[in-house]
Image (cartoon, one colour):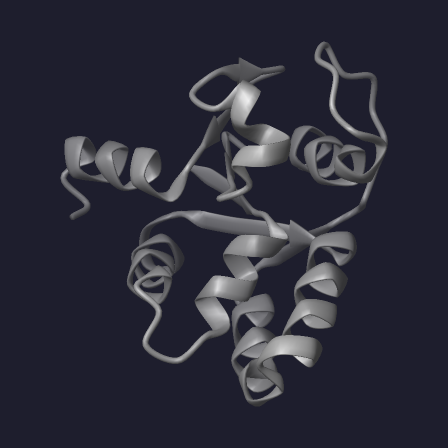
Length: 135
């Protein structure tokens, strides 16, 4: 399993006491996690504004990920231009899953497979991990 971590997942996983840390811990132990510079910078900007004390945890999380290019590939679906680097990076990085909590921008793709990548909310991915016996 190769899981691309969206900016909001990196943001949430950086916060003290966040349940996302538990999910990420399982993923780091059992799967390959990847992200790109675009997602990292978005998470960093938001943490600088809302929780600057969490920036060291962001660096820790990013250090556990493979960093793939923020590439724009031909996509079979429509997403906002600001989300192209995320979905494009996910596809070009050969991820099996895009883990995102962004219902506004990726909700229409939730649970669907786009060019080999399943778009999953944290809950959906956790349910899959239970089925695999990882949780």
